[in-house]
Length: 118
Image (cartoon, rainbow, N blue to C red; front, side):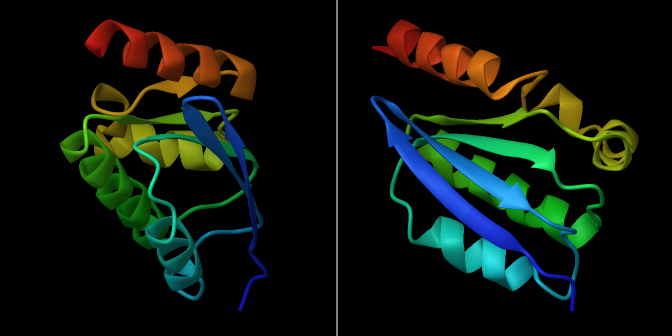
């Protein structure tokens, strides 16, 4: 099983989740359990250290996005590596989930969206 390391940092109005390692069917449940424990409606996923992701990892991110949207929030993806970016492109995820070059830009966008919806 590929090793997956997860951490998060709560900032005012948004939580940044840092994911490290390959994300696939063997460890998707670990990410799913981790995000289930977070009650924040605005999340940024730092994917800068995720060299590979399969559809099961993508599914976890999309279900998280649905849950956040229902709570009035959003999910933003940051620093996506080439292979996961290709998966997002092929599946059409880019039309529904914002992707940003850096974590800082994703946080700014998440907070900007939060401020407009208030």
